[in-house]
Length: 100
Image 1 (spheres, rainbow, N blue to C red):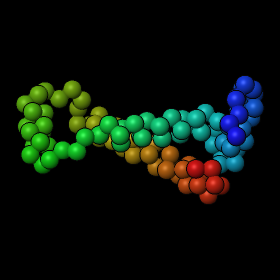
Image 2: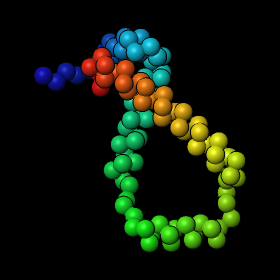
Image 3: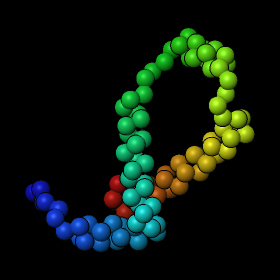
């Protein structure tokens, strides 16, 4: 049975209770679901590429001047890796509770 959500206070309480159950803030829980939605969009829009196409892209990139330094790239990589680990840990907690 579909229910119309008119009481935003009820939704807020639900988010707060789920967040409390998994040990995160409500803001982090919402950010997790935003991350999950964005990840799904990326997976749907990703195109498969042949090795030859990948080589062509790499050649093109080598000709262009880099916009981000190698140091900044490495820093971004590790920050992204930490974020992914954080969301995966939260996902495991939600699955354990049967909420994912």
